[in-house]
Length: 125
Image (tube, rainbow, N blue to C red; front, top):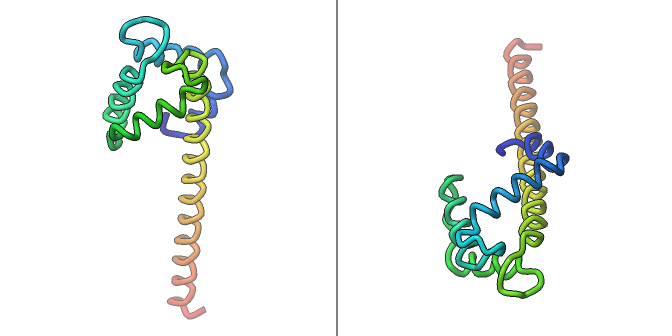
């Protein structure tokens, strides 16, 4: 989702969020053992970055991401650990997109006000 409104709609619809999270988890769980290994998460992070046109995270960043998500230190990610972190990520992205939109609106208003002031000055008023 590329708008804060779209993310907000997902976050407010627990059934939809669960379905999206489950699909992401299933896609990443290449050996179908019901948990994600560091290798499976790493592959998902690289694939997602490519799909989104983002910089591919380096090995250390992927290792640290896995360590951060593996809340119980078991060496694998359960569906619950994964789902909690997808929700957190979406909430973070929603805030970032909302803040960006607000900055763009403020900048557009500032530019419009400057143009109006320039017109007034040119008119000699």
